Length: 126
Image (tube, helix red, strand yellow):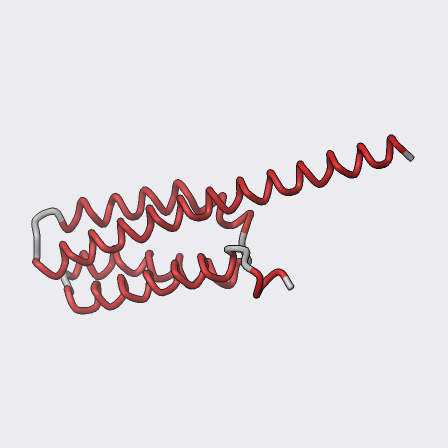
C-alpha cells in the first residue's frame, strides 16, 4: 500500500511537471511567433527595406518551433497556421503589401487561437 502511494505521488509529480513544461514552451513559442508576425506586418505596412529579413526571421522561427508544436497540438490548428505563414513568402515575392498584411493578421489570429485552446484553465479542464 505504501509503495503504491509513493508511486502514485511520483507519477502525479511527473505529469504535472510535464504539463507545466509544455505550457511554458507553448507560451514561449507563441510569444516568439506573435512578435515576429507583428514585426513583419509593421515592415510591410511601412514598406521597410527590412521586410525580407523580417519574413525570413518568421520562417526561421516557424521551422524551429513547428516540430514541438506538431507533437503537442492538434494538426488541424497548425495546418492553417502553416499555410498562412507559407503564403507570406509568395506575397513578399510579389511585393503585395495588402495581402501580406492580411495574412499576418490571419497568422496572429491562428497563434492566439492555438494559445487560448491549449493553455489550461478551469474552463477547459472541467
